[in-house]
Image (cartoon, rainbow, N blue to C red; front, side):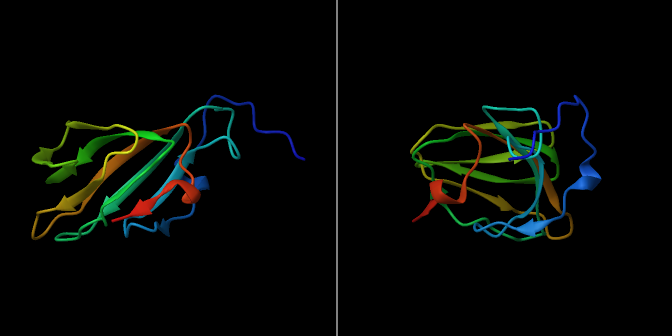
Length: 126
């Protein structure tokens, strides 16, 4: 088993983008397998104009989304609220959630923080 990097700074350009299971484009920034963090993961995500991330829930991880740019709608449980640059969305464990980019022209960029770290085994679609 190789040792995890011990540095405090990691360049975002070391991550390759991929399409997450909910449809968002993701760059993983920090996670235990690739950095010195242990109990969380952070990813940069984006939704194209008009794109919706499929609603899902996690049985292990709690999440927070920080809107870096753009505007949309956050669906958390039975509540849907408009979100914009600078807003933070908290998603408790076990609560169905999803994001929607309502702009007709602009991408919506978010940071997704998960604790414990995000795992594909902990995403359940509704």
